Length: 130
Image: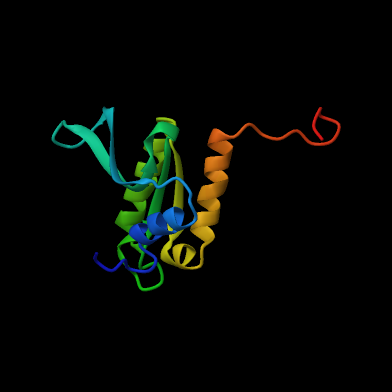
């Protein structure tokens, strides 16, 4: 098996599996039929990681501190468009940095998103709970 680069989407998927958590789909394609490109085709995106049934997407942005692709003006504008259109279609988009993947923060945030999407909230004291 090929080595997994630390901080990459594949690393985050590996962490999810290692903690016996649901493993996201990689490079999930989504499109918006109502939004067209300059050539008239439906606008398409792919999410780094996704849980399509739950409409949860994760984008891992690298190079933030070295003027990499996701930190430049046009790329940031494109990311904002992607996030806004995805949210308009009902997706929840979690955008994280590679450092968030490396230190486990992204995994913890994903767990919270999954819990919110699939679990019935526990009731607190005075709300019929224990």
